[in-house]
Amino acid sequence: MKKFLKLILSYLLITFNTFVLAIEDKGGNVLKIGVLAPLSGELKSLGKEVIYSVNLALHDIDNPYIEIYPKDSGSNKEKIIKSCKEFQEEGINIILGPVESKFTKELNKFEDLIFLSLSNISSNIKENVIMTGINLESQLLTIKKFIKKKNKNKTIILYPKNEYTKHVDKNIKLVNFPNTKIFKYDQDPKKLTKQIEKLTNYKQRKTNLNSRIKKLEGSEEPEDIRELNKLKQRYTLGKINFDSFVIIDFDDSLKSVLTSLVYTDVVENDVLIVAGNQWFDKSILEETSIKNFYFPSIDLKNFEKFNNRFYETYNYKPSEITILAYDSIGLIYYLWKSKGSVTSVKNFNFDKNIRGKIGNFKISENKVIQELNIYKLEEGKFIRNKL
Image (cartoon, rainbow, N blue to C red; front, side, top):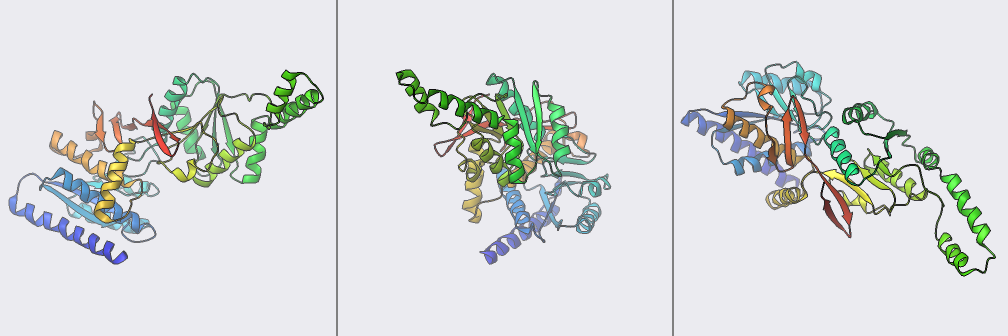
């Protein structure tokens, strides 16, 4: 398989170079796009997938006047700086990539270059960098709209104490949730469970249940017997102080929070539970007994079509963010066709929505906002909920 992937990648690079030679013979207005992807280092598999996605986009656009120049971003700033200098020397000013945001300061130094990063760390255009990932502000706006539709008015937003805490703080302030409480938890499972117990008033509700069971025991009244039998199936008695939970977390840490909510007997019929974008990860959603669990994400049908096409072409499933590379090439091409040239990030501000594989999104006032959908896993299938 590795040899097959190397052959495919080499073929694509040769194809890109052939495009360049063919266009030089034809002359005319040409769209030059650099691709800054990790073709070496620990993320090199993702880098290859980005190149493959670009190739799919080129095939669909089917315009010979597009030149693609792939370069290695590696996993360190030295390689990124070297590649950016090469882009400048070759007269390429618009770049797809990099996939991460940690070298944004280095990118900002190349003022004459425009970068469409696949990162989701910010919705704002930062000087010469546009981040096309599914940003948190877009997710929170969708969640806010969904909570309002469900008539929930006492929301608690939970997220862990880690390196992204300040980032989450900032975006919550931007979205301005009404009637909301913030709760930051430890990712240590032992500490987390105790914190969730306190948050949900678990001990008092447990005491309420035991007291009520004790009071009903010994009664021969039919109504008391029926109530007693129902109570013995429960773990607590009494409602919590919130009608909706928003959890900004992922992977094993999210699983720990969901497990703690189950343990503390958060009644799912009464409480709405929404997480951030999970990229349709069934492994997370199937491992919780909470059924009233929702999350915002991109258009599922387009996502499945893209993944199936990628699989049919390259014989394996891609990483989630590769669909962003496909859309970014389409966005650059759309801008080039409509405005004739791309000279500044300001050119990317549109007055209308753009339709991509991920769904609709808008770039306006130097901000990228995606229109996401709300999904729920139900009987092994992801069901879209109307907003």
